[in-house]
Image (cartoon, rainbow, N blue to C red; front, side):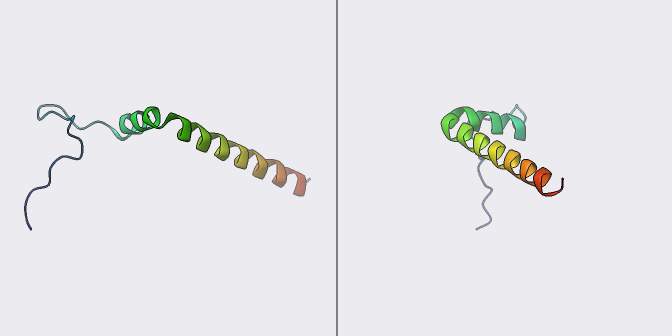
Length: 59
């Protein structure tokens, strides 16, 4: 039960440092391009809708 865990990514070589969070996020975004773009567009539309709604209610 106390066995050392293997690295999460088999691409990391022993003498290289682990990739940064941003690098892993960008790699994941490229791998899942369509879904990432859809979620980005959905988030943008939701944020714009919220801001426009708040501007309308507080005018």
